[in-house]
Length: 447
Ligand SMILES: Cc1cc2nc3c(=O)[nH]c(=O)nc-3n(C[C@H](O)[C@H](O)[C@H](O)COP(=O)(O)OP(=O)(O)OC[C@H]3O[C@@H](n4cnc5c(N)ncnc54)[C@H](O)[C@@H]3O)c2cc1C
Image (cartoon, rainbow, N blue to C red; front, side):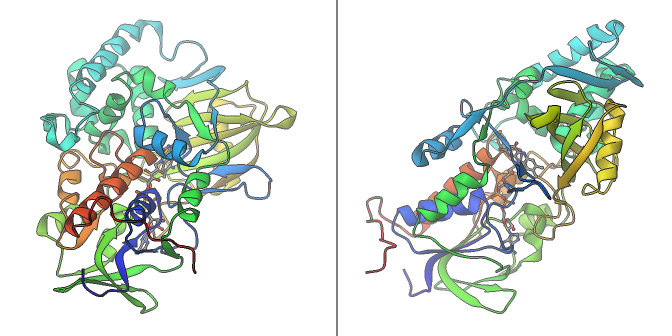
């Protein structure tokens, strides 16, 4: 390998970048991670609830170790504490213009709903959770929601129910979404729409920050915060990476592990392939809100679904004095509120519970944060199948990682996808640099 400051430079300290960096350090390489913001974790963001003393997750929250093998491996390796999630005790649906607390739709529509479940199940069953989705002959599912359901001629309440689920999970108006993405989600959970809800089985006991912080602290990787990468330049013998402050570091390779919406803000020399430039030229449609709320005057441990300001509300935990900590999910395009305002939260709660009172709310605005410019990657119809294939092809000494481009059914929606992708990128770099499998781990303890 040529003389460089580091063997590898990684841009982005989310789960993908840190997994890649940690894996390469494990194999004896020197790795520098440059992170644009002043914190690690990216879209896994644990913080104190504004003005209160409980922890809150602004991004990733749930895990499921039964289906997420990469996540399970990391949790076991570092002995990270997890807690079981408790299922809802009460439900409130708002469909067909009515609030409902028993059946989600009028009984007369149940047959239509059943046919929709079967259509989802049959389509999801075609997607294997074991191999890259882009290698599977499922491009015909890369179609709009309306096209997918059109043959069923669904009535209004059933459409409200299904479209609210899709909006909440995809952080986008259902009409804008490629159905391949929610179908991949079903495939991850045995193809069952019910299993996808029931699949949110666990959370980290001390927040999503716990695992990634431990990965960093026990690794030899070097981390520099507040260091946005602006340029990545490849030469004959290596890569130079420039940050916004003008600092330049060199490496034999670079892993770019930033959200896919902001890749185009980095200048690559030579330019990226035409395919990659086209794939990253525009924002994807995932622009959601996750609002954390402390709420009183509502039924116990609620789950809500409907085409309101927040399309889904789930319970995080019970607080003292009968209050509940809830997470609400909405998206730009269906409603466009200020996610950080208490009025937004109050309006969303009243849609389901006229008597409900929001005591406090908190949110991170991922759409306005320049290092993300959106929530997780959701493509418009026709753009979902090819994207991860395009992004997983290295460009010389430059490699790409991120949940947004994970090959598997865990892409975008899950930290599992980020860990999977970081692991794959590390493997690509190690192979390209001919790092022998048994190379000794460098000590990070100064002697
Ligand atoms: C609202 C919401 C809810 C979610 N819920 C769940 C859930 O319940 N369970 C689950 O498993 N997953 C969930 N996810 C998805 C999960 O958070 C992501 O898939 C995963 O964390 C993405 O990791 P990543 O490393 O690919 O990207 P990120 O975490 O986005 O990391 C990329 C990093 O790159 C940095 N960066 C950007 N530009 C630059 C630059 N120019 N130079 C250097 N650094 C840069 C960013 O600051 C960021 O730290 C949720 C996500 C959101 C937004």
